[in-house]
Image 1 (cartoon, rainbow, N blue to C red):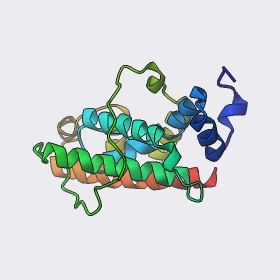
Image 2: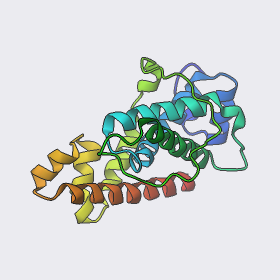
Image 3: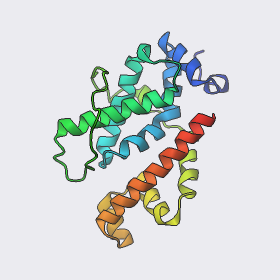
Length: 199
């Protein structure tokens, strides 16, 4: 099982989790590949700065992968993973003290995830995998958004524009950009979560 072939990528989450728990590195990569975009969108609902979103996403996967033995297979893997990501985002916001005004001010009602912090290993080449299939799924989902949100979502999520840049480019207020990105992310997350449940 040294290669990532179609047989492995077609495995269910439960099968991949079992393989990952036994130390199969390819299973980790496939799970990361499968959920990176969805987790990024989910975290982006709480944190606005792209660089911080990327850090929290990486930390979320590291926490999940280091705590696979706590995963209960009676529940969907994606639900468990998104919960870890949400709690990691809340922890990040609390630690930063919401100093950055570009961060949303969501209420935090259960920030204690019960998952131990682990060191970030940003240099890990295995975590640098980008999923073409996941990318295409998000592009298609963005194309299906209402026109009000489509352009802003495209610019921020796919073209890496900052909020201020979008505001200037489209000649709309900064708060409008934030609102449209937030609502667009929520719609995309629901679409991707529905697709995950149907897989």
